[in-house]
Image 1: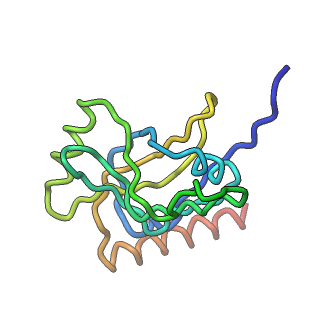
Image 2: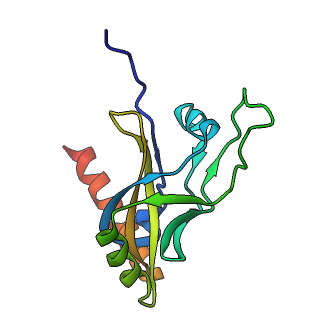
Length: 150
């Protein structure tokens, strides 16, 4: 018997506006039991989240996962640091990229895969200048106008 799983996709919509996204990676997360329950309810946010290396391990910081509504004193802290799981080759590549000036690692999408595990889609990103942001707005408006005419 197949169970009906609700597709959970929590996105950081401002990331493509604020950054030039280059390389994409999919990482697993080390979570507590109440955290995965909150994610399955859709109670997470990636707006101010970023990734950083601490002792050659990749961690996601400022990712908000709300406290589980049925949790007791075992409930987690909403803004705690969470470890990301990648293989060694990917970690070395990301660490070399993160050491460059102006480069950061941004999480863009939090989802649950077909096996029930929470995954985080991260990108190597470089911040956009003001004129790049204006160009993004211009391209979006042009494509919207073309869609209306068709």
